[in-house]
Image (cartoon, rainbow, N blue to C red; front, side, top):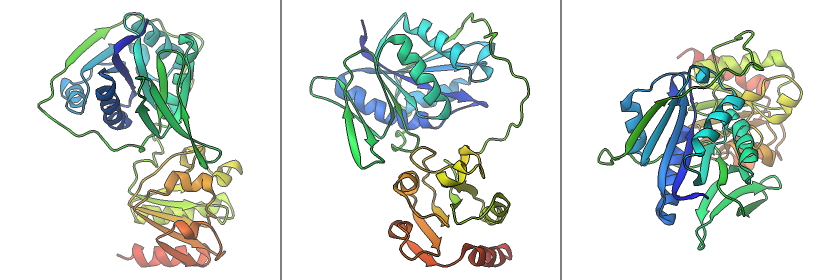
Amino acid sequence: MADNNNLLIIAEYSKNRIHPVILELLNKGRELADKADLKVNVLILAAENIENSELNELIYHGADQIQLLINDNFAYPDEYLFKKAILKFLEQKLPEIILTGATNFGRSLAPRLAAALKTGLTADCTELDIAEDGSLVQIRPAFSENILAHIKSDTKPQMATVRYQEFAKAARNENRKGKITIEEIDLKENDSVKEIEKISDQQINITEAEVVVAGGSGVKNAEDFKMLQELADILNGVVAVSRDVVDQGLMPKERQVGYSGQRVKPKVYFAFGISGAPQHLAGMKEAETIIAVNTDPSAPIFKAADYAIEGDLYEIIPEMIKEYGSK
């Protein structure tokens, strides 16, 4: 039976930090827990001990209990090992609700857990609530975000992944108290997975950038994205793309903005040669300032833009590089 006093958040720890989506999950998790009279527990799997100061921050932001499981094999993301360890942990206390971030790893881990637990899972939620009967209402866009689907699970635990940068971060309160438990666990390496070569330690992270320089089908080839990169470097930003650019193989999926890509909330979002399909708008419409450049005066992106420039990106970007690069 599920433990009716427990809402569990699975935090993602990699490269010596807890993924910042945890603060959003704690904000929404605390809200749900207060409505349903639940405790908020956080589970972290790591290859090393984490400073108590960092774990205490999670308590200050809304957690009631932190459980840290340590094993050398958690040094790199392996869904098989993580699932195995989490299932063993859940044997002791099966929660009413399980939440995790809809990161690349979270999207891969959560369905494996749900299948093992024989329960349902709603992915990429943009809102969560507690119904009058105490069940979790899982809300997510459907049909290219034309409608919002409200989903309730018949099985327990109720599971959902939550999009990053969908909710506000939890408020910090140093007066909050909680419990921290640290345990080293015995878990053998997954022999079916081997790290052959580490290509790069550098990760493309467009979700936390304050300036995003995005290109769409108006950028003719992969070589021309160097022009966007030059502008991004001048503005201390990152380069992102629309889905059609990724589909053509011109840029990696990590740079894709949109419903099936990443969600960004920068201070400034430049959209060069992007038509503005609903799929793309879903990922960037909450930017503080949107500047769109397109040769098509009827491009839908102009309706979402704060500043709309009808023009050729191949003329405008070099001028911007010349103007801002000299400052």
